[in-house]
Length: 127
Image (cartoon, rainbow, N blue to C red; front, side, top):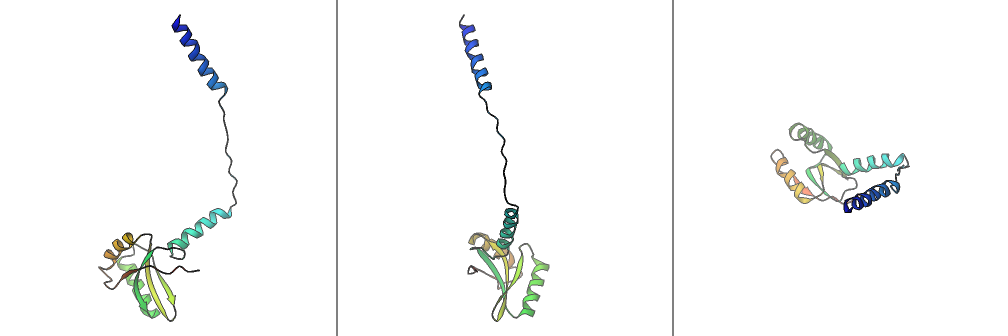
């Protein structure tokens, strides 16, 4: 008799669970420009435009030599992206965009094998 009662109660729980189950559908509507803005922010972060992180400076001086340095860097290391930044009246060759000083120091050890005068800096945030 106890088995029948247990089976009956168990059956009621399963039936009640199925009867009160809910199904839902989620639909997300977002502006198409959000995807483009996220892509732009990602590119700006990679290029050190909005980052509060660290970068490595390889050279500071004339444009002709800056181009030579970046060419040599791309031939020898090129693991991290390099850019030429202009600060009146000189040009700088910057490498990478690192969120922590530890990341920058690790990259610096690798870069200094070919560019012994390279150093880590924290660029001012540009507006």
